[in-house]
Length: 386
Ligand SMILES: Cc1ncc(COP(=O)(O)O)c(C=O)c1O
Image 1: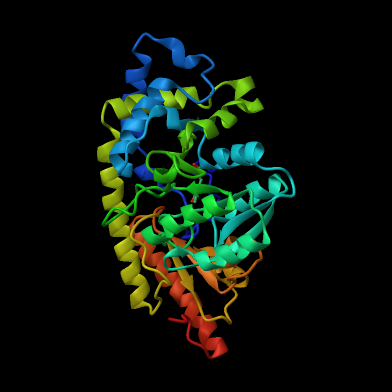
Image 2 (image 1 turned 135 degrees about the vertical axis):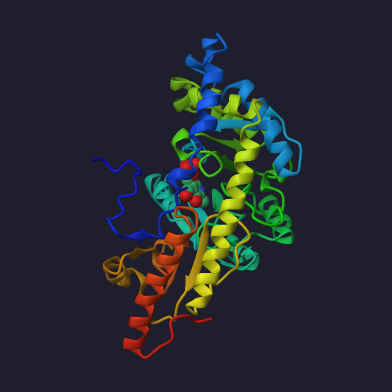
């Protein structure tokens, strides 16, 4: 039987490395209602090739939704519809970079973005981060050595660390982008998944002042299978995307999913679903934190939202090498080195709180702690540097 979850998790293994929403949380009923609504309007226009920047009715609904949640007003002319953040990144590389150019990323960064940059033959330079996100002094040093086409940053509830760029750093980052003339590509896929206080407003707030392209997606707030997202930026930057060969040939991206999600927004179905996600994920985060602490494992940072916890172990640990042993004990994670373009951070690992319900999360943590204890005892060390 095909793996319907697309995760290829070995039977019996709790895979705390998978960064997907759980299957049972996916919104079958709201999307059923939204699709029925859209298909019963007697208007087939969403089945036609769409305008390059995406369906105008959908962009208007989306602009209203984002204005309510992002803390600043924005209009449909500032939005370009994409098939998700991954596709947006690919299109941005196509339109705004040339092979051989430098792009800056955070260290650690979302590991799958590195593959997209590699596909475009870009040279990746990593900038260090701390508990408040990107370290701007280090960015400034790098800016004196390179002229990046853009900086790729995940400012809020970062993947993999869970950290959020502070407001002061956001403002300084925008000043630097103006001073040195580089684009900021802000991947804000977790912006709306806060479990306590809302984070600082999206970096898209600065789009009229600076070269900010703010990327969003329905993957984490509705369903990844929709393949639907957006780029918010100044209209003149979006024009360059609308002239790409891709949309000139195929029309605006994903009109069918846009039309269904337009109905979901019009019918007010997204708000209660988002509230539910925040509440479920908050309980999972708290349960997981408690379980980790009981095992003497303190995450490096305390996330206030998003999907991930980042653990840094004693530097003698090599989490890629340990993975085989962990799988034998029925647990998996993402080794830290995958989040570094230089293969650094080998002693770290990323855990995801979204995919499993609480009993499986607790069992996963128990198994992980068991493996780490055995390895630490063999080496005569403690397992966490905290
Ligand atoms: C930081 C980050 N960016 C992008 C994605 C993928 O987004 P999409 O499904 O919209 O392509 C993910 C999914 O894990 C992510 O964590």
